View (cartoon, helix red, strand yellow):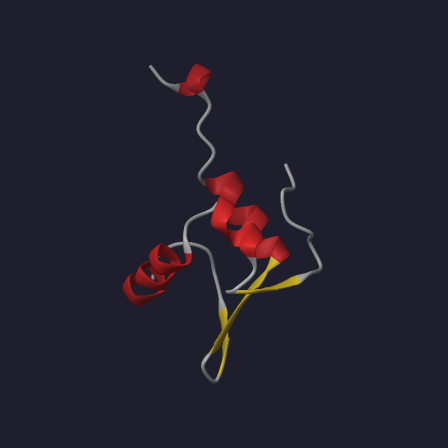
Length: 67
């Protein structure tokens, strides 16, 4: 499943990232070193679309698999 464009680089300000978590929550995750992989350029935080899609897939829960 691809929610994000694979070859796009997303800025932490992009509203699309709110599908995963609000900006403040992503900042907490980065501090705790959890959540999707990110890249830092000085103070700027970027996310690769491929990393975001991988994170979504890793956290996908299928009700049929539970039991």
